[in-house]
Image (cartoon, rainbow, N blue to C red; front, side, top):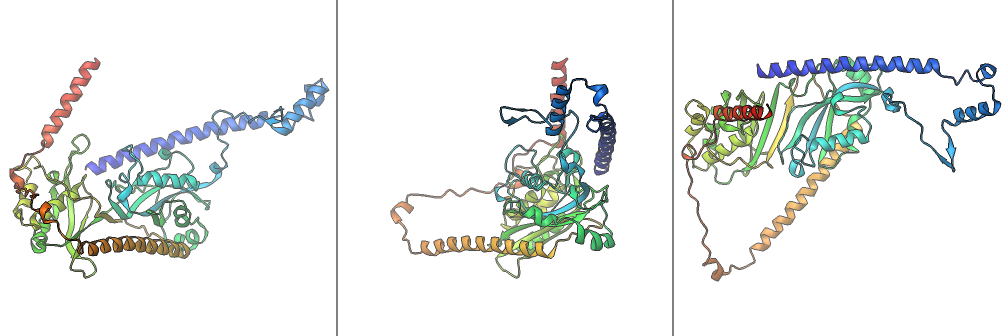
Length: 443
């Protein structure tokens, strides 16, 4: 119900923006028509005698009309721009709503979204490339921009999806996802968005594919499901206990004890997990990953779920703690615990109905070569650190120093015995009190 309300508000906002834009265009058209009708460029010679009696003045004005501006001291003055008009030739290009599938390695970014005022973000780098390649023709607010998810600082993705209006070679406006349109028109005649953008993006961001989107498409609200993967080293973890515990998270639950609560903006903490698996990577016994799929996720939800599963895998918590945290009646306040690290988390894919992303053969080859080169770079770095580990074995221990230092062993405090965060109701009451006090001061 909350998502539907947000969708209705977003659609109404788009409709209002479109109506205002139409009014602006109609007003601009009327002004332009008035200017054209009053233009004297083609009437100067016809009205020579009736309008100008002084021939010297006429010659001077004719010279200004030819040059477009006056010249003084050998320097040309800039043309005076008419207020309310744009002389940008890009405005004459067609636009269409396009969905882009994006991958990025998130280690150096402060998340995907750029609203946090921290740079760099993936979104800010993407828009720099869009502006550099002149694929966008207006401000961000006029581009019908939407994104599927807002990944946190350090989180990567190989399947993030955004949608926005881009410059198009085709005369038709709007999106079209029919196979006939895609095969015969878009692939043969449309701009190669993948090649153009990847030529302007940094090495740790790449566009994987593009797809024409219908006019009412929203990368956020049209998404059917999202899949995350969290990579980890098995070490001494009890995988069987973790698998048993993650199955308890499948289904619709109130996940307020498995997220960072935003009581000011989020009031429904129920989400549906459709699958939760733990698998080895490519048959490896050491590197594993958790595969979590759901319709939508709360802020930090995946990293909180993974953190609790790690405690269970280490034998520090019982699988029953999952049930206790899901029971918000008995556990209204979230126990304090650290989230799992952000670097191993990857947004794997976002699923949409009717979207078939595509990429030209040349762009695909270039993208493959780029990704292979990046893999080789990180493998070389891993090889260097591996050599450091091998050389460490040749260094002898200093027994005199080791005997004087004793490592503190911290005892584990059970989750259900730890200090708790404020409940949702307590947070809302605090926000309400603050709002009332602020209103009183203003009055």
